Image 1 (tube, rainbow, N blue to C red):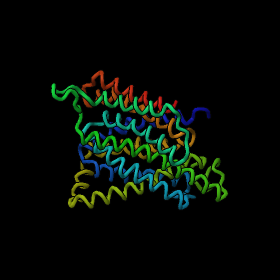
Image 2: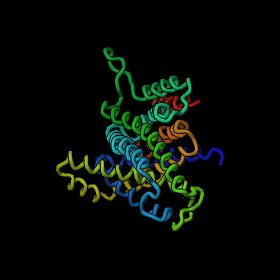
Image 3: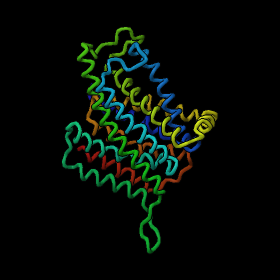
Image 4: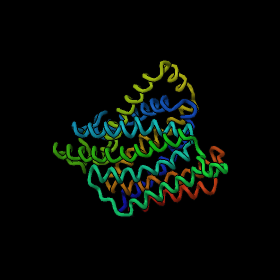
Length: 325
């Protein structure tokens, strides 16, 4: 279907908007590490059930060693490092500004796509990068004293974590695309037709539609292991922290929402989108989230939205679009 990748990418942007809103509430109530452990656990349960229905097994069928290597690497970068930084960013600067910094994922995806898999990067890329950074600067800088004409309107820690999250998401997406290419080759080498449903599956879904969920499961598995290890190493009272987290009903409902719209639907759809369009175009449309989130964040969290922040978000997203003209 024409523009299938673009339409899926737009759906991903809406899904990630909902994820960001749910995750901001949950991260502030239970902390980023307990949140990610619970979120990855929920995600794996959902993905296991889904794979059992559409692939006939509760594990990623047909995946070979190369597939696992690239998707595990993607999980470490995109989930363990990227999601940790994103949830920390939400704690310091909120989901609206956190998503603004996610526009950095598009230039990162384009640069790494060029370096790792030879995807085309046009001359306007540098201009697009500068425009994106300008949009972010407009949103986060404000006037200070006479001695200091400009100052950061946001905490430095929040800016650092959110920036790292954007960079890791872009790199993680490219690594995922390499993993999916290995997965497709592994299926082909085993003589399986990806256009038909898997034999023995309860639900007749073409295999190529099931592969993104299998890839997401691999990434989520390493994400859970990574977050659990970090939580245990840096928190002697990790059992108590997890216990308090799961007893917080409001936080748990928010984690469920963030899980369904994030690692389960959103991430799987983002991987599917990259199969129908380039990572650059996909990331361009994913980057609409900072604009989509402005209105609901203002209504739900009673945030005062300044005109310059809206202008900065629009310019930043515009720069992402320019990056791939």
